[in-house]
Structures are given as C-alpha cells and as structure tokens.
Length: 490
Length: 97
Image 1 (cartoon, chains in turn green, brown):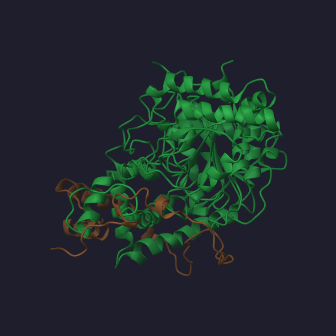
Image 2: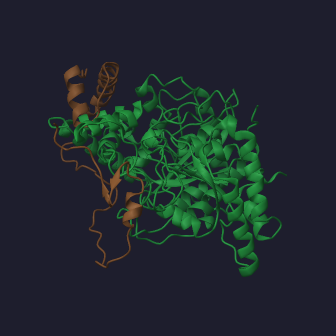
Image 3: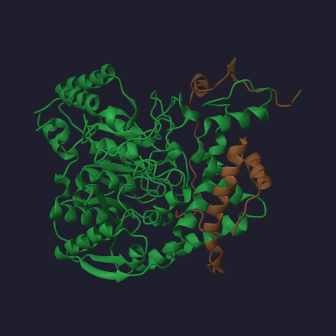
C-alpha cells in the first residue's frame, strides 16, 4: 500500500520499527503533493523539497545515533496558515499578511517541533479564519477531494482537504465557530476542537479570542488523540490556557463499547432546516451508539436557536478589536503613496482586507459603538451565559451529546458567496460548543446520495476530551466509514 | 427591521479606519441591515439578572515572577515592517500639510 494512504498511527509504527525512513516518507508525500495539489489547492505554501529532504536526513541520521523516537517524529503534517511558524510565511489567507514571516513560533509549533515532525506546508483558510468554505481566501478556494465542484468547508478547509487527499497525514486547524469540525465533516475526516483553554493560543493569529481554539484534523480518532497529546497543556504565554493535568488521550481510544455512558440527543439540533439525508445518517449513527451499549436519552437545550445571533455579535465585536492591529506600521501590507498617517491607515486596511473581513469588522464596530453596545454586545454576552447554563444542566444527566455537524453536506463553490447570512446559518450546530468552551469532535458517519461525506458531532463536558474521544472511537470501530476514500479525478 | 443608513455606514467605516467605495457602502448597508435584523431576535430574550459572559475561563489574575528574559531582537521586531530607519518604524506625517 502506498505510504500516503496510511493513518498517522500506521505510519508511526512503520517508522518506529525501522521499516521506513524519514527520507522515504518525505519523498512519498512530496510526490503525492505534486500529483494532486493542482486540483485540490489545499496549501498556500509548501516547504521546498530541499529543506524537507534535509529535515528528513537529519531525523534519519539522529535516529542512528540516539535510537530514540517521539510519537510525531518524521510524521508529515500540514499547519493552518494562521498559526505562526518561525521563518515560514504565515498569511492568514490575507493580502494583509501576504509577505509576513513570523520571527517566533506559536506554542503548538514549539511543541510539535520538539518531536521532529516533517512540516510539509501551510494550509489554506478563509481570510483570518472568517468563513465556512475557504472561498474568502485571498489566494483562491481549496476544493473538496470528494468533488472538486464543492467546497471543502472552512475555515480550516485547506487542512481538511489536505488530510482527505492524503497530502499530509494529519493537520492542525483552528475553530472559532466550527472551523475545524465543519470542514472535517465536508471532507470525510476527523476534526477535534478541544476545550477552550486546553491548547495554548499563543501564536495563533487572533480572530475572536474568547472562542478561538487550535485542534487536530486527522484520518482517525486515534490519530486525533495522538495529535492532541502533542499540543495540549498549560502555557505561561497564554493566560487563558488551563493549568491542569493533561491525560494520555490515546488511552481513550481502546474500548469498543459505550457501557455506562449516557448519550444525549438534543432535539433542537434536529429541528427545521436539517437536510433529510443528513438527519437519516445521524439517526442511523444514534442506533449504532445505542447498539454498542450507550444509553440514549432525549434532552433539550432551549437557547440553541439564539446561538447564531449571539455568536455573530460576539465574534465580530472581538474581531473588530483584534484586527485593529493591522495598521501598516509594524508588519504586513502598507498602501503606497499616503501623504499622512490617518490616510495611510484607511487605505492600508481598505486594500489589505477582503470583503468578508471588512463586513465583519463593520458589524463588530457597529455592535460596540456608542449607543448600541448594551443592546447588541451586552445582550449577546447575557444570552451566551444562558447557552452555557443549558449545557451545564444537560451534562448533569448525560456524558456526551450527539448531533449533526452541518445542516447539509458540502455546498457548491459560489453557491452562498453572495448571501453572507445564509453562509452564517450553516454554522448552527457547531457554534454552541465555542460559546460554551466545550470539546467537540466531528467524525464521518456516511455519504449522501451524491457521494459527499456527512459528519457526526459529539460534544462533551469541559476538559472531558477523553470521554468524547472514547465515544468517537467506539463509533468509528463499529462502522468503519474510514475505509471509504475519495477518488481524485484529473 | 433594522435599517443602516448610508450615513451610519460611513460613520462606522470611519471608526473602523476603513475607506469604502460607493458600491461597498451600498452593499454593506444592505447586508448589515439584513444581519442586524436577524440578530435583533435577541431583544425578545428575557435576560434580567443574567450576568454577561466575556470568557468561559474562570476569572482569576494570572501573575508570574517579574524576571527579565530574552525577547525579540530589534532586528527581528522590525523585520516585517513596511518601512524602517535606523532601528525605528517609519510612518507618514501624523499631521496633514
């Protein structure tokens, strides 16, 4: 079997046993990228062949000397291009940062690099992670490996497409309102948004700081656990990162049953607007979860219907503040030929940002402006509390919540580009976990009649990724949707 | 039904340091009106006595020892700047002519 088809765990085993070298892995993936990247466009930047082969050589030489391996050693990874990589361009999918080369690493990169992976490149995203399709990238959209006419989802669409197209074995994404889980669902791979605070945000270019969280996109649930092990943990450089013990998450991916686990079905997540085919697949999945020992229980989260409105006020308010830093002075794009400072700010920001980013800055600025703050931002913060309390109450009774990830399978490129509100509405099932800071995973649960992947979401209590992973693993083992892979047509 | 006037669009754009074209002003006026109409549903939600959530992290002061350590060098800090001179960031004139 071709190397690039292996899961992270399988590739790790072959490397650790000495069956294959880092050099062979690097060459196999470079070849794969050269074969499919022109169709998928998952990457904004791919590392040069020379530097990757050099890294691989250093790993192989070091291994002969020390004979010590790390879980991610020589593993070929893709990194979402809003995560700062020292010496490697980090664009955020924006003209504003087209030539930005960070002088430091994000904490997740420092942690990954300590294990000597092969960083293949930086993956595409909607500009500053604002979008659900990668169509808002200044570098053009990525394509869904299952159907190149369809979106790969977003904003971490490049990472999800790269994993699904075997252009990397695993990737990092970031999730503010579903940006890991929704593209994972669209591309038929696994996407995990950890608990807010589980993974350091230091060096993740800020979009909405109270919601952003970095997490893995992988081929299997076990692979997600391996990646989370590498990146989780307290970081003094991020004051919101949680100072608590990190378990070995791979221990949660052993048991194939769900005995003693109570699984909640929130009926608001199956209301009007859910595509019938998606609903059917989710109900089948619930049957499976019950069949392997989970106790199924209907629950209610009454504030769910308010989540999108709440999110689009809070996220845009935070974004308008976070993006104020792009002023053409310290880094990034600067408009030419400005005579004075204020003029330079205005032209830099107008030329550097794309339409969706401008729209969200405008909305956030409006919601925070004098006379509207209480009515919009203040109100949204109170409703956010109600959404959290709904979850607190339900998690007294159940261990895991099950729902769809997205109301429909992937839509077509261009379909929703002219209607921003329609695009926002597709985030309905993923947003609540961000507002409440919960861990949530998206795993494949079948294909639509058109052959597009459908995702199942499992949400858990804060800092209980282990339970979410356990349920996801048991479901994955009971179904094996993973064996269905996309065929990339030329 | 929220309606954002052309004047309001211009005011908000100015606050956000954005310079919009006439087409953008019209488009954003319409789209923001539509989005604000949608989010106005929150006004129906009774929230008396419910505290706001700014962050899900339990609020606590995070302090550390005040120990000097290496930061970025001046060269690194300036490496991405559009214009520099003698170790400083350069900006256009702050006051107009």
